[in-house]
Length: 161
Image (cartoon, one colour):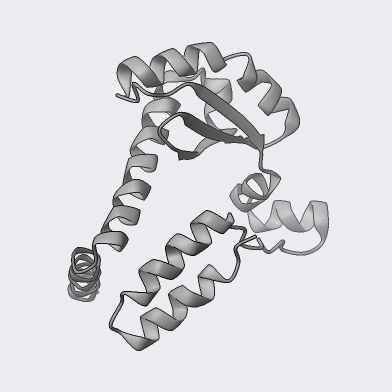
């Protein structure tokens, strides 16, 4: 089993390194994960499990909260988060922290038994992309030589609004 994981990891690494745009996207995802870990260590324990970094650009950090109540509590921390991200995370150009409510994330973290208690079914998350992100993904797909992978990535790009 371990050998198969190593092969998959090696194939993934080769794929990512063979395409500059895909490598850029992968690196951005890794940076978001690292930023999320740092933010979780910085936040109060009560907030940690109810929010996650969703994205960042040159000037905006987007943080998703489970519910509107947690989003409100998180908004009180925006000045502190902004200062922390600038000083401790190296996001010197950051000007804004945007807090959004993402109940889908909250449901995804619940156990299946909890989900069935509240809704009776397992919710499925519908993919949402901005037009800009969809165009970027489409450009990445068009530069990939593998036809199966290209088709899969092009399918993802159709979720743009």
